[in-house]
Length: 574
Ligand code: AMP
Image 1: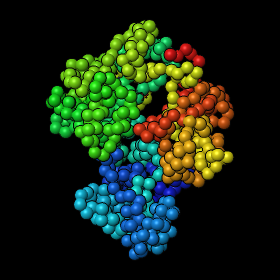
Image 2: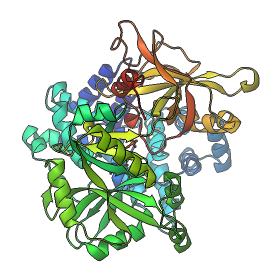
Image 3: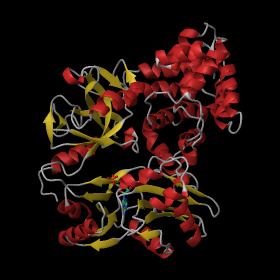
Image 4: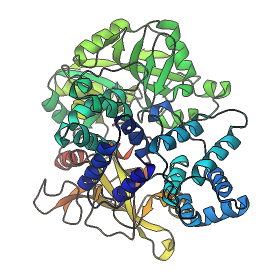
């Protein structure tokens, strides 16, 4: 395929008026590709040349890309760098500045060159990357160059979610969108969209045969929420409850030699936990995949410290001083793979037994504390004990539940402390639009339009306008900087809204929001018509709490959860 056909498809996708149209456009383009190019196109769609967990980065800042563009144009570097900065979008600038020509690059050539740019490292790599990029841009048409430059600078903003790509692959290669669950399963086990594309081309049997592999992250299972202990007992019956630790969730893989640590967003964060891995190396010698909550403890008392402390380890070079100041302890709660055997389809009870037999104590490692509870009183008592022990509450687990990769379901239910006069839990919402401020807030954003994620429809449905909880710095500086790159003229095709904000955004930024109540509203689309005909759900007295960069938009609170919270808000919760 020519790269131009790919570029044209993406432009159409950007202008699509509905998600379904996006799926069709993508499926048509994928079907037209020679089979060996489909996986490449899938990676490029996400603005990458390898799955996210491999951490392959282009390492080309906008300024460097502007210098490459200057080289391609044969113009003065300083002048082009300045012009790009003024324009605010290197792609748009390249489209205007480059001479009209047909280009005609092949998709494979562009991919190979981008990959070479990403893989070049070490002394002198900056200059080599710049020259290679300049050659590529010089051979491209303005449209092609614009896309290449947006990809290398990490500014490709299509808002095409993984679910949309999987659906397009199902339509393109299995002939039917309804075959998506097969692809989804393969993706949940491997987290590699391009690999799934390759399997889809081979057919349904290849997809069914997929197994989890050490080194490839499994998409994490997530917990649902319910109003309180009675509802949890009703839903799960007698079950195992575990302490809910307040740290960073880590999935650790070991192949007998090498370790990989993946975050909840499946980024490779191995470098962040050398001490934890050292501990595991001392006590485990066979391949495994486990999940744990990594919690910072007090170096003097050994007590657990809250989540924020883990952020101190998110630095490029973790010094011995930092390791000493923020010591870590891993509370292990899952064993997904043990010496060649995948355990995720086994019931929780069996996985846990296996985990307990497998576990070897170490001062940096502990098993999550668990208890079998049969009555509401027992559950409440265990909850109180967990709070006393410095935890956030409990995660309640259904004894016969398998590990559902990539899903949020009722096999795990979290039980956290409620705050009087407020909803018992906060919501993680995606910012999709904004109104400009007036008066004291003139020139900044006055309020933001926030949405929940409807995972069945793969779209974002609005439920509130948030104006409070932001500091002046948030409104004047932080939000414009964070949201600026995602501004768009029209509503994004994956956003469903009855509101008309002054500006729209690609659904990217996730924020945590607290509120007093959930009410019915004709003006918001969240779960529209689900509770009452002609009405959606909305938040009363919403307030911004913090940015949730650890969550992708698809990990935001789902519309199903909002409905659940709506029904549960009046029941007695602790
Ligand atoms: P939340 O982030 O509020 O959706 O709660 C679910 C999270 O609780 C998981 O993603 C884990 O990071 C964390 N967690 C802490 N302790 C446990 C545990 N014992 N079992 C499962 N998840 C746990």
